[in-house]
Length: 291
Ligand code: C2E
Ligand code: MG
Ligand code: MG
Ligand code: MG
Image (cartoon, rainbow, N blue to C red; front, side, top):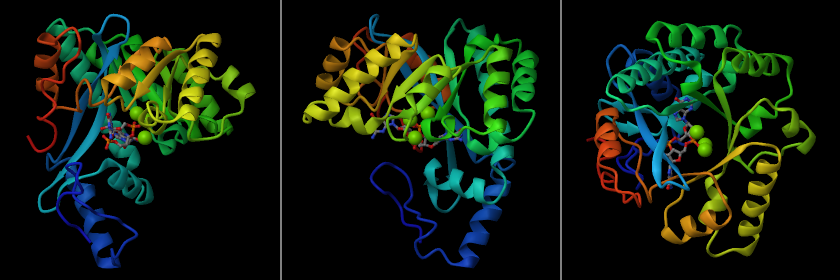
């Protein structure tokens, strides 16, 4: 069921499509060993301060370079990892690696907040906040340098386990962001109580900003709502100057997307940040996958 290149640099592999039991098992096995075999890495995508036009952070995104399939989309292999019960191992690796990278960047003078994505399985498991606190301490990095992105549908899951984890994460001092906002269904009253500092508007709204009045109305309303609640707003998936201009006029706080840069290896990001043009031209945007 695997073919090269789905147009975004990932190998096409749909676990529900044609993947027979043997293939599933093989992929599961491959994934189990992927970390120790050095096939897993983090790429980083800049987040741009809308007002200053400068990088103020980066989102860490998992990459799996499979020896025969090539780059497998995280949407595919994270779903597999969740199903096979290895998401916590993968998630813990991300925590360690992101903290290590934060410490290294700090040494080179690149001081910016790094975001990691958390799976619902990690939130349900006890001890997450403690592990994150330990990883930060081990690297000598301040907790306020780490931001945890949690998708809206998960953040709104009002279970004791996830609520407790949110509180614990806040208590240790990491920042929280609600990812893919607008795709779940938030209770506004619940949103009000969430201990988050940031809200990321889902890419689907940004994509339609220039062409669809309703998308524009939603984004405008979300920015106002977020600001009224004291949250910073990030637009993800900004691809055109037109989208950027609309978002600037709406006073969106941070912009992230291919207009500025695609996710890239850590060393590339350092060079990008050091040589970044003030208007955020996407100098390194070709150096994405497989480089
Ligand atoms: P996400 O957290 O919402 O990340 C944003 C996704 O949009 C990334 O895809 C990014 O490469 C892509 N993107 C950014 N800017 C643009 C743009 O301008 N245009 C378009 N078309 N796409 C853009 P990616 O890296 O394939 O990751 C997909 C999803 O996989 C992430 O969505 C996140 O939910 C999940 N993921 C990635 N890394 C991790 C991780 O370490 N842990 C967990 N639990 N999930 C992860
Ligand atoms: Mg994210
Ligand atoms: Mg997102
Ligand atoms: Mg997403």
